[in-house]
Length: 246
Image (cartoon, rainbow, N blue to C red; front, top):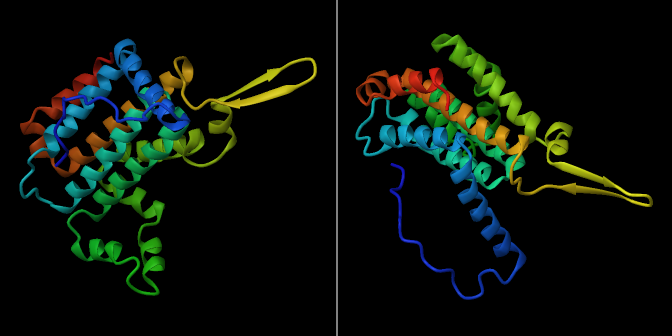
């Protein structure tokens, strides 16, 4: 299950803030505070995280069992993306969102198929293991499986997967240029890569992508655990959140 919140903030250890890395991490945290306070999209992210937590917390003997283990890992990756986006580290957010998307899709694809799970877990056990896993978990096969469950979910999977790649999950020109600044003077040209966006279109898009992936993931796992989603009222909340964006 996901960890509970630790509310005690301890003072930093001696030497913290005396180097470039820890100074950067302080800025990272301060940006998260500012985004939390100023950006309305964070309300959606917090609300989605609460839905994840309620599904995953103290989930005893879920049926099927295996997809729930993947949902835990997908949630962890999604939280990492949320933290990076709130700090303004938009470019790198996409790699973690892509991981969350893929983990979710793999978990639902495996379902309660224990031999398939054992194949995936045994990837490194034999000389042919990697090739067998690559053949079994081809993206097209996963998409076809998702289409049997929900064509809109499958279409959104492909769209989100490709968008995260375009925006930074793979090195390419769109994601690279999105966080780039160019300054030209009379005798020189400077190119900068922004590590932490403090506002603007880039931050807006990063936060919105966290919301989109979070909602997609919950809708996907609702297909696997419909009774639990209904019992906890999360199905209704997802519909309300989609109909009444903040």
